[in-house]
Amino acid sequence: MKLTRITVDPNRMGGLPCVRNLRIPVATVVGMIADGLSEAEILGMYPDLEAEDIHEALRYAAETVRERELPLLTAP
Image (cartoon, rainbow, N blue to C red; front, side, top):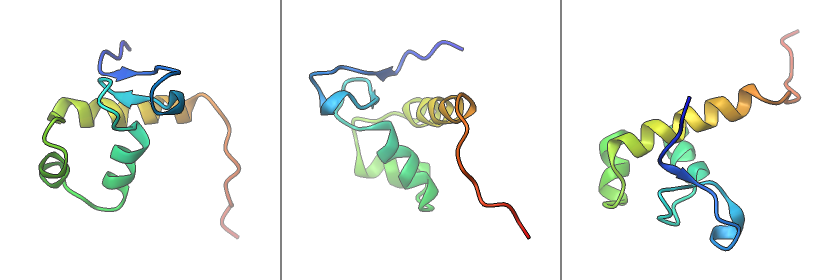
């Protein structure tokens, strides 16, 4: 998978993955989705974002989680 909208610049936002150098971290976008905001609400809050930016941020987050083990609680 090739990601074209996610950028990492050590001199911008502390090197956090951002959307198209817009100073909008991927984590912010993914967090808003997790908090229940709709795509339309996010686009309204961040007019520089495009729908594909949100989709790619989610793909990036999914790919990042696949690459490492996270400690999770198991159901009893």
